Each structure stands twice: as structure tokens, then as C-alpha cells.
Length: 419
Image (cartoon, rainbow, N blue to C red):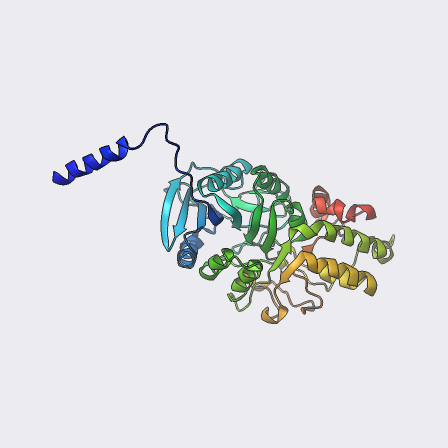
């Protein structure tokens, strides 16, 4: 009873000193706020527990001047989507949010806006966690596709954020958002990000990077598949908050240190301010060899034997080829040298091949994934994939049509060759 009276008096004193006209205290401006957007209403839900454990550990290494914010939507009927902060190993500021679809542009915008408003900072980073399939086009929150047990994709029309819309199942089928729409959502926030780190499959393709060029300074990701357990956040989290100019290299190298299925993950980092110059130089290079490399009988480039990134669930029909390897094969020495100079200004980091073991880190689905049919060395490998239209068989007809919806197709001059 004595405690109650004391508490009541303290409350009255605090109330008496606060006037309605007094402005609310200004929120503390952090050095950097990073939002981890976890699209897990699918078969990735079982990986959340370990990811949280790693993030909890990683958050102990960042200062209170930084904010590690997580939004998660899991396949759990008893738990609605929620937003929270990791602070020195503890979960704080947990807020439940309404049930929704993580691939919906409106939801993505709302979560981003909430994080920016609630956790203001001098700069922001975004982690995209979940399934993805590169630049592939999906009808936003409409078209249903499927994904592999790892974060690769079987569906041909899917980009990021598979959400199955069923909280009681770990199904890998669901709705996705395409890169064109994702770019529009990010631009709508009015806040250019310091970086986007894609902890999802096949994100590091030139088509997606170019679409997102106005949304962030750097894009960090892999052109290949990644396993379901994703990044090692106990070391990646501190790297994401580093104030070093080459913090992105620390992120990529922390990921490289992780081994899965006996292999490691190829990552690259794109500096977005250099992408328009790369598109122009790619356009120039294509003009020097595209018409000579094809004929009326063979109107498409022969890409056999080049480095590719996606799994062999498409049989031998690959479409995510290494763009450096393409240019190395077809361009003259002088043209390639000029192109490579611009390429290296845009691709500021790529995992060295000596640590990759000759094969991408991926889940051995049905033991039919083969990444040994090409030469993997630092001369051929560039770390970024590019699509070049192929014979419009059933394996390519959709990609040949969908690539025309991407800005890169026109900026790099692919449209000029009848592809």
C-alpha cells in the first residue's frame, strides 16, 4: 500500500510537469537503421528460429546508435506478422501487425514507412529475406508459382517474396512481387537506401540491379541459389552496420565464410550509380559483335559452355548466364577491355573463385544439379548474371517476352537485334 501511494505521487508529479502544449520529445537519430524483411509465410518458416538466434548474437556487436529492425510474416496461424527490434541480444519494441501478404506492394510500403518513421536514422539498409528468382516477372500478388526447398525457383514467373496466404502450412507456392513493382515501392518512400542485401536466390542479375538503381547506393547478393538457412547473421549483422567505406565487402566476406553442402556462396556487390554507364557500354559492345555472331539460320547467341547460375530443374535450358563470360566470349579484345573497365566500376566486389570449390552452394535436389560444365576462374567469372534471349522454345518463350518489360533490355540495346 505504501508503494502504491509513492507511485501515485510520482505519477502526479510527472503529470504536473508535463503540459499538453509541450512538444513530444524528438526521436533519437540513429547512425543506421537496417530493416530485415522476412517473407516466411512459406516453407522457410522452419529456418526462422535459427535466423533469430544468429541475429540476436549479431546485435550484441552493434552500438545503441544503430537499429536492427525485423519484420516477419511466418506460416503460423497463431502468430500474426510483427515488427520488432534486436537490441544487444534482446527483442524489444515488438508490435503486432495485421495479417497480410508480404508480396503486396501496399504492405511492403507500410512496413518500410513504419520502420523509417519509428526508427529514424542518417541512413538505411534493407535485407530482403525469403524466396526469389531474379528478374522473372510476376503479376503482383496474383500469380501463384512454386519454389524449391532451397530458395531457388521452379516457377518461371516469380521474383521476390513467396507468400502462400495460408498460415497453417509450409507450402512453397505463393504470391510474389516483380522487380519493376518493388522498385516503385522503394522509390515511393522517398528514402534512398544505403544498401539492399538480398538474402534470397538469384537476386544478383543485371536486370534486377538496373531496375533498382535509383533506390539504393549498393546491392549485395548472389546470382546463384542459396540454401534455406541463408546468411550467417551473427557475423553479417555487425558487417551491415560497419561505417567503413567498403562495408559491403565485409558483408560478402562474412557470407563467404559459411559453408553449406560442401560449397560456398558466390556474392557480388553493385554500385548503382555506375549502372547507367555499364548499360551504355554494354550497348556499345553488343553493337560490335551481335550481328556478326548470329545469322539467319542461327539468330541467337550460342551460350553453351558459359558460366550459369540457376539449377538444372530446367534441364539444359539455362538463362542466367554470367555477363562477364558472355562479353569475354564474343567481344574483341579491345572492346572487352573497355567494357570490363566499366564493369569493374559497377561491380565493386565479387567473391574470388578460389573459395568457391568449383560449384555453387545449393541444395542437391534429386542429385541433378550440375555446375561443373563450365570454366570457373577469375577471368571468366563476373558474379552477375544477364539474360540473352534464346530460341523461343517452351523453355524460353516466357523469358523472351518478359525481358521486354525490364528497363535493362532497352538501355543495353538488346531490343535492337530482334531478340
